[in-house]
Length: 171
Image 1: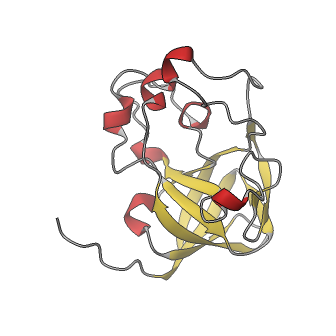
Image 2: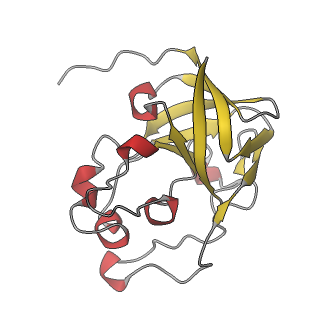
């Protein structure tokens, strides 16, 4: 187990990046960041746009490492621009695709299956700034399935890799 920090949580009821990036994001709340998020097994974060959506069952929560944010493109970048849900400091989640992990924010562990990379799209060049899509390649976070009900909170947390990812094929 390692000590990490949950830097930010984003629970967004609206899918704001729809259509063409040149049209800009859809309107929504000024700030969808929260300090506490309820997690439901196999459904996602209560109140989020992907909660209980069948098409997103294996990708209802997206974790990202703060160390991978493209701060060289925009020093103030955060989850509002990247549209990920959980921003962690102290662990490289991108290296753990295929693993099962546990995140305990003080209210009990919540397990997640880290299923696949969250590939950055052209929207990153609009919401973060020019060059962000390229800067986030292979560092855009991981799409996850929550395996337990629980609560995530901003602040210190414990992170544990429960099953190692399968080795990636070499190119």
